[in-house]
Image (cartoon, rainbow, N blue to C red; front, side, top):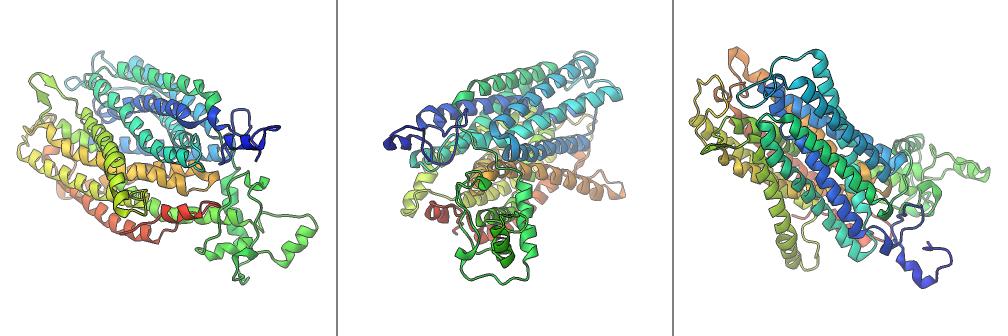
Length: 593
């Protein structure tokens, strides 16, 4: 593709080679668009938006128990459902982005919704929920509220969920779009971007987990929510300021129709014997408008039933002579391979859900466990939610160790593979560390119960075991995130077809969503079973009369089973093969033991 009309041939290399365009719809020029200038803007935007989101999410379980007067199990379930809904909305954002709006427009619109939700939450909390004034801290729970007050609160937090959910998968992919993976130098920067993106996400939540967490724990909920709203507004302004610098991919049309076209076309030709040579299958030029300029995907031998959708029958030949083409009867190889890519990703994606069950405990049961421990040093009280700061510090440390120490070391040991650990291997390591996190949490809970006053009526601070014994479980979760979530972001972005990149990022978030729902389901099942015969159950309102340790050990066992299934799925997986990058892709998805 020529970079600009009238340019000399030697100047054409100044354009990106991955098909990105600039703000005006022209081929993007490398020196004037994208790269780290745009990448840093997006990283700062992500940090501010994350600060805003976790300013609400990190202490939501305490808001529900202290302000809305819910019990521990109900509050934990409501937080899990809300967090799960955040990530379900990521599918909405990914669909609109890949199909119609493009990533830039989708990010901008959902950030506006995010700001509106936070402003509404701040107003409703200050005007209606925090009654009497000064309530909502550890000593002074708030009074009762009307149905209208509760409805306005839930409407506000679910607007926050919609805005953040629709924005998150697109901002990660939009940031990666700023680097041309066809260029070796920019391709390396693109891989590094995902690590820095996750670091920005965690650093953004550090302020929420410490300063905002402290104010909210002391009952200054409205101040914390207003700070979140201001941060979200600043993030939106910064994002819009970089508009002219960004690179863009054209939306590829409705992916659902492309998916079902392949399924229906293959079904119509189910009785046809396929030719042995894949060259006989129907294909189009990579620049054909039907594929929106996306790179071609080379044929693979898995799911051969779907290849029938690209088989040219006598009827198809006759239709072509008449100038008739039906995508519901004949699909190009690249479209068929899109469907195969999605089907290959699904088993890996399913195996990440149990990990997300472990991850979501930080926002619910870890906080409740910490509240029942000794939270004071001298006269200073440590907010239980602020302990997640150790998760963030662990993420920052392990990102540094992985990128600067482990990855180069593995690359030198392998010699022929300078990439170090593959994404699938890192995700497997993340599952192993998650098991250690749950074992650690269970052991801490055993000792917390040993030093607890079981007859307390108000359970907070009832154990003499210091809250700092939670540090290992938070640190293990942080280390596992670096391997699991960063690897997951890279993996799904790299393995998704060009027209479904946002969908790839949304898969990461949807696994977190389903993890929250599975966590809520597990808590409900455990409480139903463990409260039979008038027993208090594993997770009662007074944790000193329960067995939260058994729930943690149950999660460790489920994650171990999940790890074994994951290894089998990862060994079976075959990576996407893009035209011109076959050799690189042969190694990209490999899982070597």
